[in-house]
Length: 89
Image 1 (cartoon, rainbow, N blue to C red):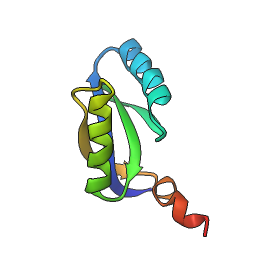
Image 2: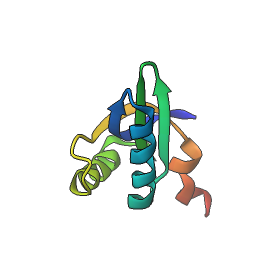
Image 3: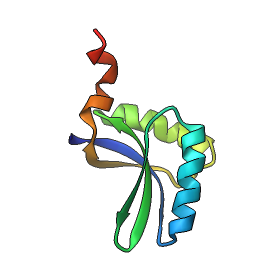
């Protein structure tokens, strides 16, 4: 784990709404999707990005795909997933 960026596509107090958005996001994105509970909110987040510019690109994609309130957040990320392509070499 390390610090980086994810795209938050929803924040809600309704756990069922969060699950539904999570399922929808899994189908719409090639990135990892995370559902977290930070009382009293359920949050659905997408991706593991080391730099803000990469996260912003996916944020724009999220907005085009119907997640109009998507925003970039700074948070802990999975660095192995963020650097996954580099580990193949």
